[in-house]
Image 1 (cartoon, rainbow, N blue to C red):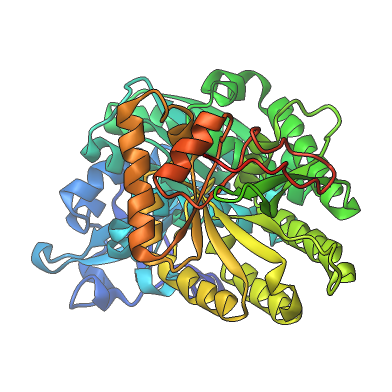
Image 2: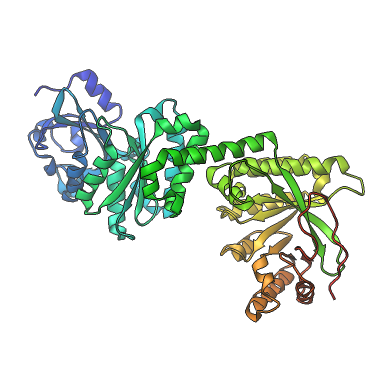
Length: 527
């Protein structure tokens, strides 16, 4: 067979270093480009040799099965592979493979150094499972949102093994295989020990997800169920909102939410995305319209029984969405709308306080900010700027850092909190003790106070173990100079106990329920 025309060789060489043509038996027919990378001599040394003479045995077995996934006019890659005539001096390449309809018995292989494509397996190996998963979701978001028309050619496939927990070796084997089919060779990820997802081209047959799972089973011995979602249909459902809904659905699938299991994806995947998209759109519309309200719950000095300030709690009604407020806020975190939500809350609070500044009726309120928002550098920069523009509000506005989503950069957040506190604004850690990270947060973040989770308060009167934990929290905070606010103060017995162990403030139905009015608590000094 003749050499590839120069213009096609040039096309291949713009993204690759070597172009190989192999026949149906995987013997090298032609080799072009920087052949010295593979052999110290010219291309004649490579010509006629079986590909197995160039590729390590370990990579060759995976390559054989990956090639089985090629149907006419399809392409796969990059596949990470070690290649070279000298077994002791093989180099790592990213290999792309494809076939042309007019030459169905020829496979074209383009080999590129991984650094040209921004691929680094060693870097990937250093990432935690959650970091790899987040990287996949970020790439998915970019793939389907930032390039117009891209979604027309792509599928998103989820796979689940019939074995609950695969060995670490099998997980890596499956993930590597899936990456070879994925867009750009890095659009696949392990979601759990037995669940995976990838973004790939549709292929001519329209059954590419089954083709992937069948060949993966042959390659690894692992049987996987699969279901695919057509990216073009996601786009039709609401563009950006549809994309957010897809990412949320995949996250729920990874977290074993029974409403987002494999069977549901198979039978009603499009309806599932549609329903979630509707929820995203309604939440966004609610924010844009400012269609939400505050209710206020008093936070009271346990010594005097008088109101110190109010917590502003957001209330909204999304017609046709049957979830409570906390669930909806967690949903907003998962779909990437929480920063918009927190900004809207903060803006509303400032708007309530500003007109009354200098007046006796100026309210003192605290607003909640999500850990997810506070892990975002852009949000933090905007927050500091907003507070800088309203320094007179410092006596009347405080911030509560919530742990509904884990904070990822405590060192960076602490630097921002220092700036906020330097402006005179008070900062509290919300729900202290409720999550595993609470004490770590208190150690690394300099704050004015903590709100002790109500679970510790509710049972402390009757349960000595819970009471001991509560006392240790109060003592710790006293020793490091941090104020304490106890949630769930329902009875006089609660108030008396909290006062006795040195807690500063209380919040709960004993002092007042959340109300649309800024109604001070009735004076109820503990004693």
